[in-house]
Image (cartoon, rainbow, N blue to C red; front, side):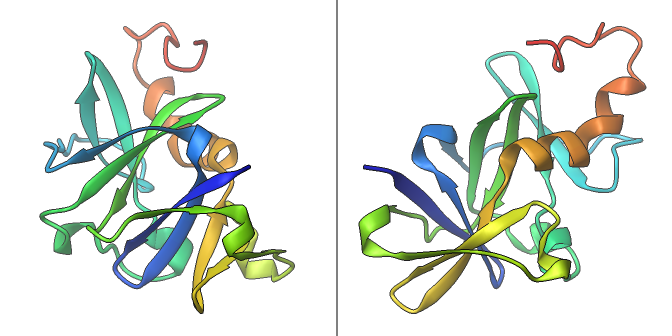
Amino acid sequence: MIRFGLFRIGGFGFAVTLEQIKKILQNSTDYSLPHLPGAVAAVLVDGGELVPLLDLSLLAGAESQLSNITQGYRVLVKSEYGIVALPADLSGKIVAEQKCELSATNEQKMNFGIIGKFIYQSEEYSLLDINFLALEMTQDIWQNQFDTGGARRHK
């Protein structure tokens, strides 16, 4: 049985599979650093590693909601390229696949990092392609760091 984590940031709802979720942090400290790519809002430290916090408002086509969310979750998700963090407000839930309707997306503008729609209790959540987002939204973050040796990319 596949389960999904359902989250919201501002008015944008997103879903990720439960097996991709490493952990959920509440009230973590985020650090804004100079020269981060535009899609990375900040970084946080987890277990001695820097974890990029992705700005999902880019997927929703709205201005960043991160500055408006002072208290909330940081959902740490595993990808093929390392761990990334996703911002979420305090209304997360875990739902089994059987309790929802899943559909693949074919809208051109929704293809960037979104592979389908997850509908649960008449609410729509975008099913995220975490591997694609981790690569596309963070690719500049480690290329400009000479002292990392590509450690995050080659895990």
